Image 1 (cartoon, rainbow, N blue to C red):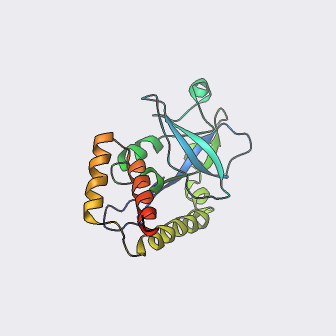
Image 2 (image 1 turned 180 degrees about the vertical axis):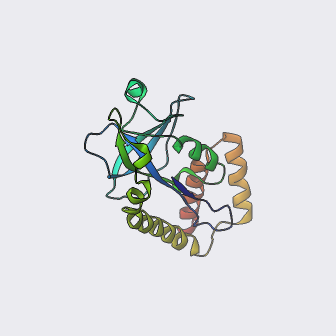
Image 3 (image 1 turned 90 degrees about the vertical axis):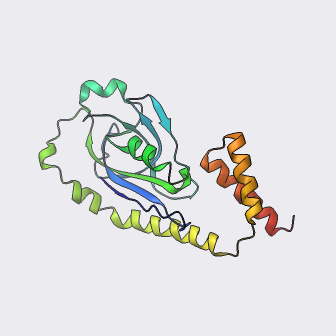
Amino acid sequence: SSSRLKLKKENKSDISINFGISGSTIPDSVGKLYYVNSIYDNIFDKYFYPDMLFKNDFLKAQCTTHIDICRSEDELSIKSELVDEEASAVYESLISFFSPDRLFFFKVVSDIIGNDTDFKNLDAVGLIGSHINEVSDFGDFVQRFYSDYYSTTEVISESDLKLVSEISDTLRLTESMKQNLLTHLRYRKLNGC
């Protein structure tokens, strides 16, 4: 799996895309690309939900993160259609730098859980490479959206930002909720309120 990470907070169009392979419980899905809409961490029994703000035509699926390759005996603990070894760790690592609407997870199915798979001869690069343009085009679209959105003259003053920060801290808002509050404030300011 590969991840792209930018840590410069001053670039408001930054996003992160985790793009890799996964096992699947869906028959005949080898080679298909899925956009992950929720992540379950099997080790810590936690769910994570990347915000899906952009309409798209990708197949959607939930992903369970296991600590090891799943074999047929692990199928009872699988709570989703996809299984990988890193999505939840990637999400938890990046959530300090990105709001959930900036985190994107794509998985190409490499094997079906319960089938005997020769992982030594698995062509992970070929599987990922067959979908790289779709994922890259989507990433470019999202970055253009954020870039265009933030390129307009900023209407929120420093005192407004400070107030939003105080409200966010007091109410313990998530980063996504804080961004939502800022968006509503921006709209109100643009409408002259």
